[in-house]
Length: 126
Picture 1 (cartoon, rainbow, N blue to C red):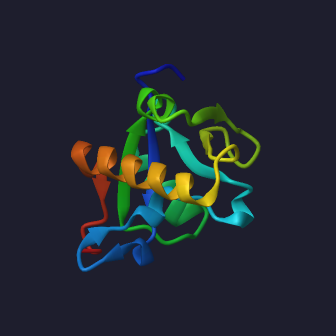
Picture 2: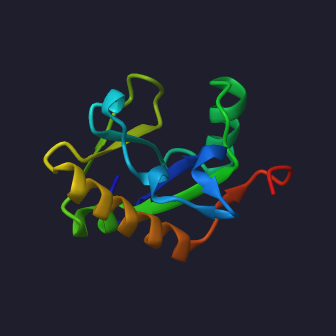
């Protein structure tokens, strides 16, 4: 990964309200140990990450949004490869921030992802 790498985020249907993605899509939960699961866009395409997530892992996704490593670093969020679950897995680490900052940073990442636009969408989801 480098600063231009786009990290791919699967968007669960519950993260879409009234046709808009919520910042919850970019906020880790406590069970995630403050690390947001992503796909390394240098290793897998948005479409293939969607297929892996929905077909291989059998999870729900309406599509894929992305943020760059540089955009994460601008928000003081570190990024790391985490290949244990699968080779293309990466994480954005929010662990050094309190709940309020996590929410603010999630909103900023969501805005950056929305500005980039959908990288892949499930045509039957919308």
